[in-house]
Length: 252
Image (cartoon, rainbow, N blue to C red; front, top):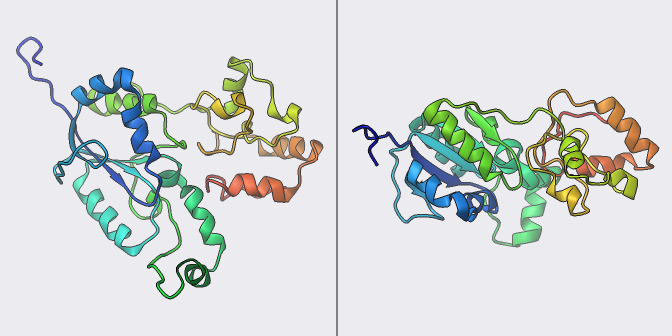
């Protein structure tokens, strides 16, 4: 639609999936109250879950999923060459996600155990930024569509865009959610970046850290609380490693 005789420029967007469940892509289509406006604001060039059309002519590439095969490496490198802006979409793309758990096992023996005499080609799981330069990361499992929409506005109109710097605990307090530690659950909310509106703690499930670390998290105080509440290092390590977002953290 023209405004004052000027045809607005729509960004050409492509959405690609790698090793993942494709839940983040579904998030883009599930929010029906803004779906029509979202689709009218962009030009979809390639998005398997939304359209049968496919084109390499795009400005923004949204990448869901981690890399777990050599052919995915080559495909990702091609996408990076075509895209002006490359966005890692979701925990798998940003950190490796739950798929990264397989890196704890011997791939050859595990492959044989699962596939028998018909092993599949596989490599250690890596995040998108471990393969190619990433311009913007939007973490979460799944992502927040509101953040993706805000990102598109940022790229097109240079409107402000910033992920929250504070931890999930702030959003729990805003929702009047009782701290899960007080209910005997281990929760990564004190060190995990907010922006999800804390649905897991509100539903009675401790945070697993899918959005990665908050800015300048207080690990020392967090580890003290964990020990005071009687949780073991094994339990803590299981939580920290689940999405691959806290790989660099040393438990002390």
